[in-house]
Length: 281
Ligand SMILES: Cc1ncc(COP(=O)(O)O)c(C=O)c1O
Image (cartoon, rainbow, N blue to C red; front, side, top):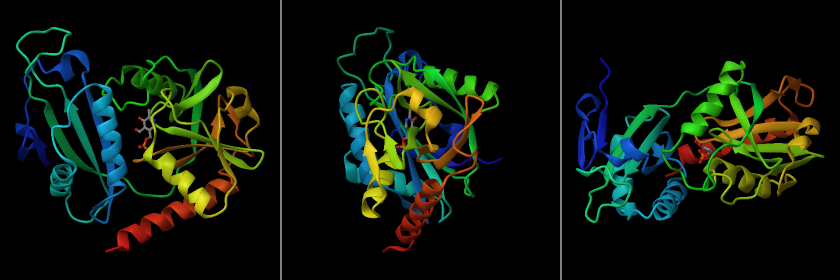
């Protein structure tokens, strides 16, 4: 049986032996945060950006970082197995305490868990999506483990034969159930601005960086949900899925119903960037 080595509270142990107390606040209250960091060629990708976001999430839930950046690096690198593409999952909860009480206990040890899993590679699979009302809370910029709304929204998409839900709040596109959203509107690559309504995606930022570096017209601005019906292209992005073209939205084709030319250009730039990173050092 596959029993990978994982990290739990300072120890590297087989997954089958990794146990936490039942009164952990992550289990009781969803009181914790997480990160998912891809690794290519055995090297963690955009690690600094992921660690910065982790710190922002921890600060957002008023939890002191249990490890320093150099210690995170060491733990996460230790989990990588060989040079295959992997994703490291890292979760920190406020920890376990004998009483179930909403208030923060005055003294408590956070629970830190991390594991690496293989990352499926391959050419991008065009996806279908539905739009859904964004029913999540108002601090979506924090990467917390409270994912029930995201889970229900993604499941709604799956049960309609789709891969992703595009979330809409007050008539504006926010993000996907587990991704950021880009649209090509009048030839301009467009994504909603950062703020509490969406997670500041690391892949999102890289795509904007690549667009700027290679002279692709792009902008960060609010996108009306109604604009998606006339968008030439719509994509979603995340660390594990990279960039995925949405070719059908709410049952209607996006553009000509095939991945568009801006998508293919960005896909090439993204793969070139990854290749260069793999070969660096
Ligand atoms: C809600 C949400 N938005 C956006 C993203 C994309 O973020 P990143 O590119 O950092 O993976 C994710 C990733 O899982 C997510 O869950």
